[in-house]
Image 1 (cartoon, rainbow, N blue to C red):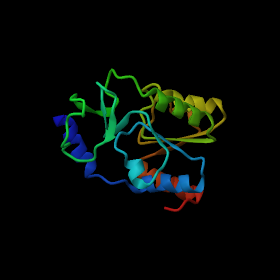
Image 2: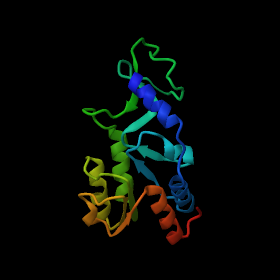
Image 3: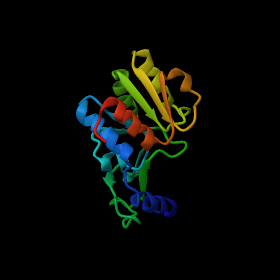
Image 4: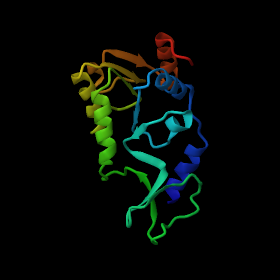
Length: 181
């Protein structure tokens, strides 16, 4: 828990950037807009996004592997390390070797399969199953936009590329789409 308490302290001191605000504005103007994220920091929710699908879980959610109980735990360092059953809580995040939450994966696939526009932000595009999501969107005719400082192995499948920091590129995109910033 020492490592995760350290990470929780770092993340807890952070706040969403203006790019998160652009995403929230897009959601408000386009009710079908959704967020599928590999991030575990809940910055999207803190910014005001709703209906976020977290592929890799949340550093702020806890689960007991013994009894399956779950809860939110926003205190840092975590004060209560044991579940009521006596077993250790663990962060409800995907560790290397863990399977992703199947419900989250299926939700993401369903949402992406119906989208008209996919904006992939700051992803390496090499970790599956997240790396398959742009392919699903493209197969269903969606326009694909990549926001990344550098090209990725999947850059060639995107119709549009914005190279630079996510917050700056999202602000540029918002101006082009006439979203409030």
